[in-house]
Length: 91
Image (cartoon, rainbow, N blue to C red; front, side, top):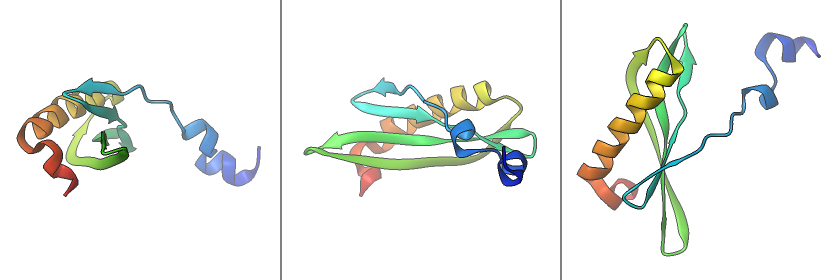
């Protein structure tokens, strides 16, 4: 393992396969980010529209102590966002 890989981690180690949750035709990918010992709520909301995948990056200011908690809250917040915005989020 190289010095930079040891210091910063390798891309392969940091990449996680995220299983999406389907909600009203949208796919929600919770991808909490580690920040200062806590986890920021973030992820992606995707939907195929006319044969093209549209993606909205979802980032919130909330920080939680666990990755699981941040991903759970991201799912709930993104469902509310979908209910409010629908496909307009891609405009």
